[in-house]
Length: 350
Ligand SMILES: NC(=O)c1ccc[n+]([C@@H]2O[C@H](COP(=O)([O-])OP(=O)(O)OC[C@H]3O[C@@H](n4cnc5c(N)ncnc54)[C@H](O)[C@@H]3O)[C@@H](O)[C@H]2O)c1
Image (tube, rainbow, N blue to C red):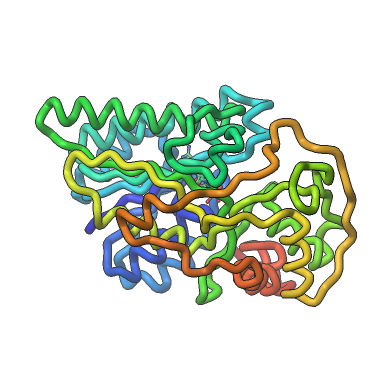
């Protein structure tokens, strides 16, 4: 298959590119490098045997995308490119609607013009907002009621996809898509080539590991009086390679006209304190913890009910243990303390 991957220089997108190449697909990665890393593309090019091309472009460039999709006869699009910081989306919502919602619209216009028939979209559990306790663990039937612009910018794309697929069906040109609602993605690829490098970093596991490496002074726990066994928030951490396995399963399964949505998580949650303790076990290092106030809009428990994708596509996360997920992330952070910019203290020339 010829697959166009938007956000291919980012954390999850680069892992998808790697897996698609391993599976013998031809890949075109598109990224504006706003938050992605050309070093990831270079690393992937080295193993791609000519099957990867990189287009530095913004997803708002509909004409460029259309030309690439037509010229390369793209069969499917995996759309990862987005801005993904909740706090930033609250401060600058228009940027999020432009980049994530209007950006996806541009990708979809190119898909329409070029006649691409399959689409896999990176959605998020943030589209569920603050689910009522009866929806924990969260099934796909949980009402989607996001509580911040980031979540809304993603939900709007899901709605756009449903509307577009319905119109394509009516026009006799069936289009299929899957909206994959990720929980917390973590870990790195097993060959050590790719890893997580967000700047700024807001995800718990990288923050803990960067603190263990002495790059941060401490880790703040936001809220220690939640109604959970140890008082801290509980989240579902899914390994990035398991997450990509699900994308591959979905891509293979999409039949003309399919409109699917799946939650991608391991189906159980770990509290912030459990994650910190696991990181201490895995690394043998200690860190300073600061107990801070709750953050607005942080639900006490968020974890997936992944039963639907298990029954329909036989996908289930292989790595279900938090120590294993953290060990995988640690492999990367220990060797690349400053992400793609350095490897174990050596500054990269690129
Ligand atoms: N990391 C998680 O835990 C998580 C959880 C839920 C959903 N997601 C979703 O997964 C996707 C990937 O997340 P990630 O963690 O890999 O983020 P990331 O920032 O590492 O990757 C996103 C990539 O998209 C690119 N990009 C952004 N806007 C673009 C634009 N307008 N044009 C071209 N390229 C653009 C960035 O440069 C970056 O390389 C996002 O859609 C995010 O919302 C991530």
